[in-house]
Length: 178
Image (cartoon, rainbow, N blue to C red):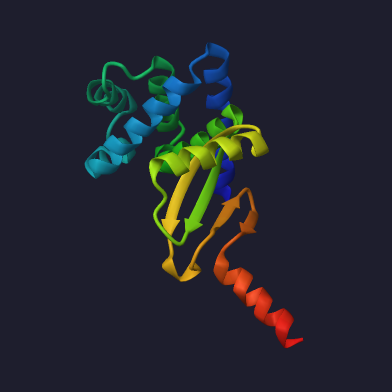
């Protein structure tokens, strides 16, 4: 729990700095790329968390391994994490930052579960309708479940709209049994 609070504080601070510099998108992209690099090469994490290596050596190493196009704000932020011995929480901070970034940009995630795979045209129509209803950008995640028989289930922001045939038939059956 303590780590999540710390991750939130660090992510909020970075978000505010990125917003002030007009680099929200750039920092989010750089953060994702940096996290992928570190996940792909766990030895980087091991080296940067090693207490026997001097901080300035770690910072020099960081400057060498990060791509040249990594925003300086992000590089300095990671150096602060190293200095404050919070580097091990980088993954948590990246996830928290991304969630805050999407909130700030008005991006809403919607999970669509349908009885059949949705083609591109249908996904775009659904996205358009949801953008009007939910007032914001929509990120669709689709799932196929043939047991629904038809229709679809929408999940977003703690709300579920079940328009599946399976549920409709179940409700009809319950009404007929009463």
